[in-house]
Image 1 (cartoon, rainbow, N blue to C red):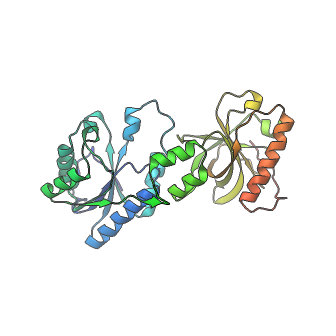
Image 2 (cartoon, rainbow, N blue to C red; image 1 turned 120 degrees about the horizontal axis):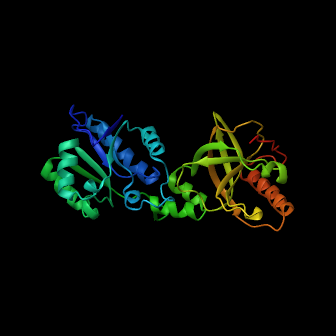
Image 3 (tube, rainbow, N blue to C red; image 1 turned 90 degrees about the vertical axis):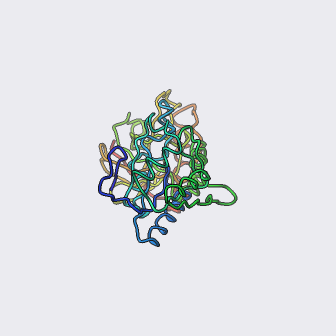
Amino acid sequence: MILSTSEKVTNKTLDGCVITIGNFDGVHLGHRYILEQTISKAKLLGTIPVVMTFEPHPYKFFNHDEKNYLLLPFEEKYARIKKIGIETIVVTEFTMDFARMSPHEYARRILKELINPSTVVVGHNFTFGRMASGDVSLLKGFGKEYGYNVIIVDPFVIEGQVVSSSKIRQYIRYGQIQEASRFLGYNPYITGKVVTGTHRGTNVLGFPTANIETAWELLPQRGVYAVRVLHGDTRHYGVANIGLNPTFGGHELKIEVHILNFDKDVVGEDMTVEFVQKIRDEVRFSSSDELKRKISEDIEFAKKVFSLSTDAAHRRVIV
């Protein structure tokens, strides 16, 4: 169930709930740790666990032109939060009026009057109110004033590093897929629709590709990747190129996936591309023959990543 703070909650659905608040972009292992503690506390108290999140993301609200930021679209974030076990998500529309709200006003109007939780669970670096001027110490004080308990969750640390969305964004932007996966708890991925391409992969290079059009914001660094491809209920393996096709003088960023052992007309269909390991950077080759040789090497590399037989077939993908 999704509730909106733009609508008054008149049926007291959330009274006494355990609520956690955050952007949860990526729903990474640090977020999962907070969400699981929220669920555990709600079970202990015999009430419902609730997530409050924001749309648009506050960073996006103040940086309208930033097109390479979000780890997940909202719908994907919602699905991942729900899968962890939280059914009720309160979506706060992030507006200038909301941004200007003082921490005290936030604690009273949003938490007490709208939600009325028994417990608020937040991360150690949680901030709230105008210019992020409220911190966890202030929230604890407001909790005593308005009658809700505040639980501060310690940072989730892997090998001495705090797991954070900002760190994951950095890893993905630099093509450090395995490092990003370690923090996310899953491989970075995109979902999109297969569109008709130039047919250069089939007609010139002999390696047909599915060309993916996606609304995903944050893409891995330009280069070649070993990928898993989910099409319907089936999983395949392949090689994806994110880039401008510099060998052919391209100027438009494209996502092209060569799928191993695959022979279907998939134009207009949805696919999920899961990035597993970077193979190499994008390179401008002196000829199409040189590029063909390199693509063959990329495919062999991907087969080793997935422990596939080196003679695994790569059939035509009709695009």
